[in-house]
Length: 408
Image (cartoon, rainbow, N blue to C red; front, top):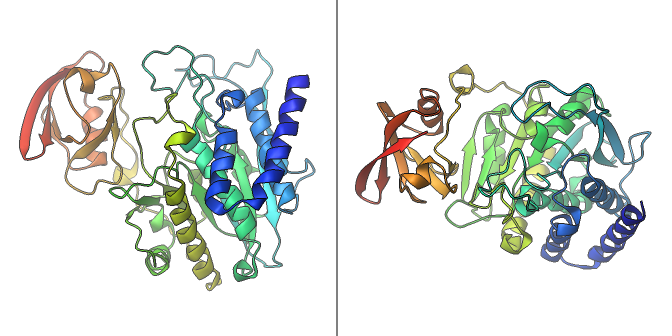
């Protein structure tokens, strides 16, 4: 208990100090605190996650955000771990773990509210979800995933109090349990503090700390409102390189709100080789790139304020559902790639792709007899194979086409 109290005190002191800094320095301070080894990877239900929640709540308090819950800045829910990492059943013989969403409210007196969200949990010491080959219990700090998103929330919690954003109220939510299956956002969506009818749209920030010139920024969910594409285009006055996708469904918290018939956007600077590994640390964050993301987002919010409402529309999901597959190549796809095939953005150690000699930058164009025209084609091809199967993989490497044998 003394350790928890001490860390809470440190969190509050750091929270007090960062407000004298500029935006990039604020991003850095928040990420370095949240992604420090002392928080041990912020796994849902752990002391580290509780310290992170306390830090975020202290930030909201210093910024003057209102509480909207009987629990102050918190919304608690119970998380029950699964019997084993591969089971869909929860262990009802053990007491549930208390997890907390952290919420603050900016009241501009509007009838409509915009939800701004990001998850603050990560993988702790690895375990389920880790892509670290050694499985040796190293701390996974999750600087990009998703201390970067929380730092963006804190920035917006200050910025959106200005008069130029007074066309809407703002509910700022840091979710827990995202890595366990969107638990916190799903709980809020089904137990809303504010009526969904008053919510104009939801913005989600998940991994926004690795902006690069070649990838730029990926914005998912542009098909969830008919106005999104025009708003984004007119807001991009700094000509940030953008890649957009239409679907409101994805492996992050915006999905929980889309399923409640709300327009959503998910901001994402792309996958990288440190994803879900101990090497996702704060020294690799592009803080200037985060400011570029923030500037674009603020302009989108300002322009959306000029509209009374956005026209929600359901997006046409690829083939109605994501193909089920039980094997992978062991690569990180480049989600910003717009060409034919699936470009590899990172290779996971000791997995089929590495064993076959594939390299970062290779474009996978065929698996066995199945041509690959993009991410959907890649997943469909994987669904045709089972563990132990042998086949061939065909990739483009520069101007050369290479074929290698692989075993799943």
